[in-house]
Image (cartoon, helix red, strand yellow):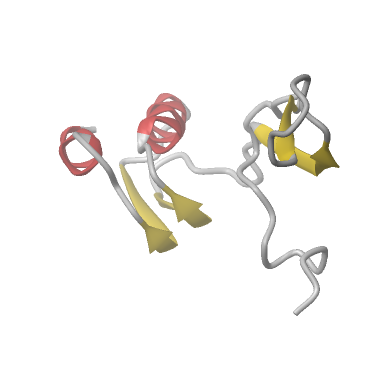
Length: 100
């Protein structure tokens, strides 16, 4: 399977580039992590007095979902549902989602 077809992409905040040699001789080649510019959240529809849905492919930390839910609430949505195809939800993430 080709890794550049979109199915194996890293999370939004990080881009893993090709393997580069490390500073010390003899160490294995390691991937270099490069920061990627974060996009601002975009509201694509009118949500006042409506149920909103948030869709994502994978999540580990629910913090971005919580921020999005607060944004939707500020714009008038009375309820928000979160859907992720691969919800890993580590640490307190499930509790954060329930409380938001």
